[in-house]
Image (cartoon, rainbow, N blue to C red; front, side, top):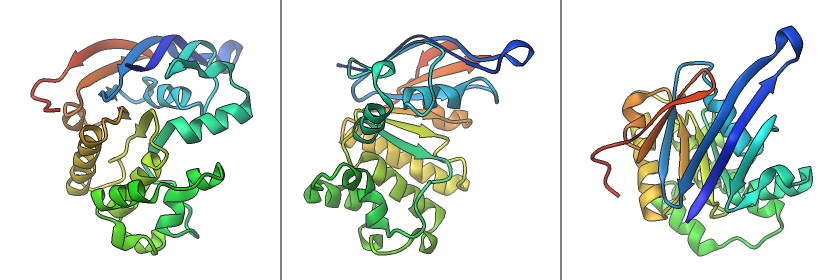
Length: 230
């Protein structure tokens, strides 16, 4: 089942002499349960691509489909709801709300939609991420690795179609970063979760099923990674 498809995706910033094309025609596709890493030099368009797919920025031309839904046709209100329900975000700096507890941060996407949480599933996720005993703590009381685990839990709480991870290990030391990457791989296997991850770490990128390399806003190459066990 195809979860994600982009067609000739382009993004322009500025006008006239200040015009810059961040993306110059990106066409990619992802099946359900696939783990894709996106690499490339600084300024290659990696984060821009992720932000467009997640509906955090508007496209200049092209199409983005998530579960066959053309997100460019959605109103701002519809897009906001679609993001909460179908897209999970994991950022480099966690983006947790400091005055909310771990549990409140995790449940926020569900509560915004006035839905009833699936407590059994949430408990499973908290156990899986080894943060069940942290649910009443504030983010400031957690280590960086623990905060990123909370961000991962928040990203999957709505059982999204796809998780978009933008440098999820970039703010962590090597050991903790490797642990977070292992969690993402396990999440991908355990829940058949589709993940699209931007990273500057080529060693981590090779642990995904497939790696897409961007250079100057274009796909330079795509390669399937050997020895990735599903």
